[in-house]
Length: 623
Image (cartoon, rainbow, N blue to C red; front, side, top):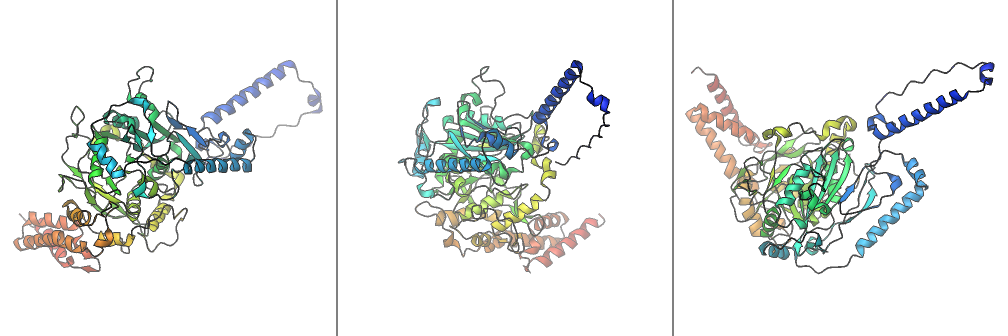
């Protein structure tokens, strides 16, 4: 695809009757045999090593002929690999079946998997929060290594597979297709400890295996951590699940010690379309673990991160709590022994619209990092971050990553965040930082890591189409009526909360695509005190947002941010203080004071204009 057709060879001259009648000699026969053998060998080499751009057909990631409807976890972990390209017809011919028979077998396998899920024996487990609190308070249990057993939840050693109608890939079937009841969701344990599903989506990232090794080496109870990595690599890239040295040379490596806990879905990087689809596959690899942690492929963990995160989650006393934030840079964050040095943590409150209309979306900007205003527990916040998310496993079941958002990068966070909120989930900033991110601006070795958009030419136009779908599905683009509605019910809003209330309380004007800064309301702890402490339901089933429907967030922001800033501008104008006026104008422009409280009623527009004009004159005045 994308290459010119080969030119036709010129027709050979017609043989004369004498030549045609001439019998071939033994030498000529040998030459012809050798030529044919070389040709067959050359074709075989092309079929083995040619890339997608060199082939007449697109590659099929997992060969249909294999009919691999389940992949069993062995001692080496699960590796769901992409096999060499083949066409559908060739695949069916290879196994001696018709397309209809293959489809029938696939449907039967799905039905069998579904039946096994329905017949899974019920297990009596402690109430989820009580179990987590008990585990957090208990003494560390002895690590029994491979003698672990799984209680409560499905066996994670087998993936039933199905073909994704959108991409043609064979992918794991969902743990549960529909929504589950969070309050009765079982707590899966290993040796009495709640399990943790660690999901990593990696695009040609050499640190993927280092992140896995860091998580396993620093966990208090590493035997309860189940790793699912979606690896999008090219030949020669560092694999996620393979240690630096072979395990028979150094069996003490973390990826060797815990190899049975590591599952890797391998995808050719040339088939990648962005983090949304990779994480979509990652969510499909979930198999009922008690907790789920989502991170980027270049993170470093502090000691005892697992017990720390479970303890922080339990401190919210909210089954629907999701700990999430933009992670602190790893530079200067850990002691040589691996303990966290940070007393600060970021909180999610700074977001604004970007992109082209009509598919403008809310993008999270840099977030403030400080010592928490309420240090004893995680603090409620309005937004969710993809690079760090820790919640009960049912979050992955109820708020599935969209199947159909190729080439989306920034918009994924507002999609999952708002959909999660509508399903009843509440986002919290952690009280302590125990996972850290290696950012490229402070790390020379990360500046040349490939990005998924290097294959942008294959998916030209997909980004805007995807953003239309994303914003329309979460009610952020009321003027978009034509968009991709594939499985819209599955990847749309929940029914526990009305998304219009989210936009009202958090000052998001979807009609004008305008958002107001919320950090004074969030990082001060006001949101946590007003919403969480006063209106967390007694049964721990989330914050009752209906009780705060009439809360005046706009009034709070005006009192704590807009009015004080307007006073600064007035004082600087009166004093004609060049430095103070410049600083105040810059702050006013950052928060768009000239548009507040709304673009239709810009109370401070004239004030900001006068301040800007005076600042310009003072800057150009003679000293």
